[in-house]
Image (tube, rainbow over all chains, first blue to last red; front, side, top):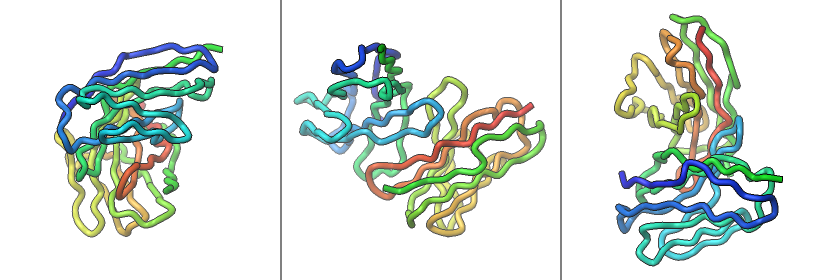
Length: 110
Length: 112
């Protein structure tokens, strides 16, 4: 499986944008880029996914580099509820399971 | 989106005993999975629970230790057998036939 590299931790101030980076230099053409987050004492929660183009939804935006070797999850206005571990995951288009890396622990400061 | 319920949410067990964790999905799904999350760690896939056939286990996990049942398209169980303190973890069920996958909130298991 292609691997992802994320910073172990990041901090953000409340109501400011947050950019969470992910490197995936060995990504293949059929790998989708998924982001999940895990809030304390909960199971992982889907955030967003994309293949080549940038994606937006109500939770976040996903910016994908032109060469697809990196991506950035953007939270437009961080709230205290966004404090979580964010996982960047590559998922083969036909695969069903998710392979989790170590993720980024996001701390949001009031 | 699918809602996944796990029971129990937590338990404290004696070493050498076994515990069965239940996972109920509110809609029919083909694919269900079991993950383990050790303290302070990320999630590791244990197995894929296949309906009507034996589960598919990942490297490092065996059926004798983690037997799985999948009697229908909305339910699965994971048993943690002959428990030792090293089995103290959170066990999570997930389901989803497409994208995304949905997760339960996990079963927090402590072995004394």
